[in-house]
Image (cartoon, rainbow over all chains, first blue to last red; front, side):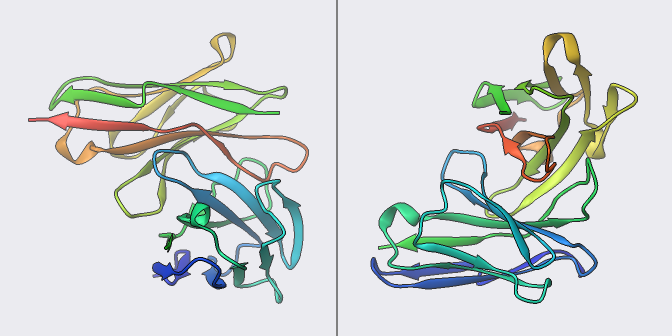
Length: 114
Length: 114
């Protein structure tokens, strides 16, 4: 399977703990995106990378959130000092840098903060 | 700024009936428009997209959508619903100086009754 993969698929943590999620994009894609989806809502953009450069960050991405893509391949999203409001599905997508290109989504990481 | 409105958070049809899911967008530049489907606890899968050219777009699983600039709409249709079509559907728009992030609508849950 050469699709987008995410790890872990599920994460339960206690409030105040740090969590880190990983996304492996489709290998030849140079763009990688992170979205957050809460129950009953559409995905909301968080940030995206072109190769290793982080090109845009949403205002949703508070200073407790940090994302990296150090070698332009996989990416990590870390949430520090988790809050109950961080409970959501975190989706990763990737594509080529071309206008109108389809973004291919991974299965998501579902986070529950107790 | 871009935005998407999906009219009707829930749509219910009988098996074999016409499916119509509504999407209206707002964009200051000619948009790229997408429909994605999401099954429970899974990521998003592209159904179809409009970038340029023919305004009637055909996608997977018998779905199609028509881009109507004058109505700023991109409604999704399928002539005959199947039980397997039950899922949540998201309309999204993407265009701009960075043609990066997708802006999603709130989603429409489609229920298909036997």
